[in-house]
Amino acid sequence: MSLTPKRRLSERKLAANRRNAARSCGPITPEGRARSAAAKLRHGFYSKSQEVALTALGEDPREFKRRLESLLTSYQPADALEWGLVVQMARAQWRMERFHRMAESLMVEHLEKTRKHKQIGEAILLAPLFEKYERLNELGGAVCMTWKTPLGPEALQVFEKCRGDLPAEKAMQVLQLMLRLRKPGAQGDFGPSAKMLEERGKIPAAEGEERKAASRDLMALLAEEIEPLEKRIRGEDPDQARAQIERDQMLAEAQPKVALMSRGEESNLRQLWRTTHLLLKVQKEAKTQKDVKMKDDPNE
Image: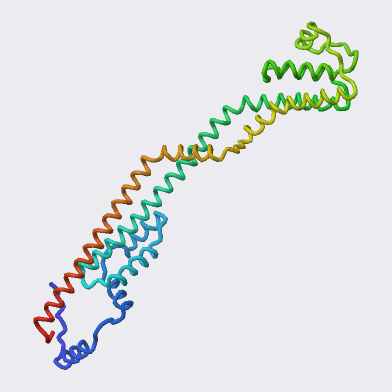
């Protein structure tokens, strides 16, 4: 109970207020009615705490206000019940879009995380391949010098290091070609593999055009082993279809969480449909009652 006495209006002031109220018909345009409805609305999304919450979620409170005002303009709520239904529609639509965004974010995050784990695993598996690639490249560099100078014992020693990196049959072919590229009549320690091969039969050194052909054949054999390794180490995958299959498999692993977001989105869609249907039904009933009242009382 207030201890301050209420100020009494004079009869003259009261009559003036009544005349002024009679002249006022309120907002008449759809925009004015929407502003009036929004001004009277008490739904909590205009509060500072709700704005902070939406901002923390990476969402724009002003965008929600615009969405709500658009719905108010479209449905023209006439009372608190209709206003509340329009607010529920705005919230359901907003949450529906949020769940959709969350589902996509989950898939992107899972895809990136899975790719990182895959890259780490591949790096571990590729370490031996990289060492093999380095050894074969070293042999290729030593062989390249045979275009101008005969092949010496150092190149055969490099071959001994990477002999296990080559298939057995191809290793013997490479060794035979290397021995053919040595200097004619050269003697020396060319390694145990060369010694064992020469014990089976003397391998003559190539000269002239035969030397050039042997050198080309040797480089071609090494390239058959080096180029696939290089592509794999660089991660080059010309098979786009296979890449898409792997991406789909990664996304399938995230499906349980994505399905949960989809159910949330579907739930809000059903709520939006039910609320919209209920609002239209309430408005239709209100219009029917108004028409009946006007028919019963023409003076209304």
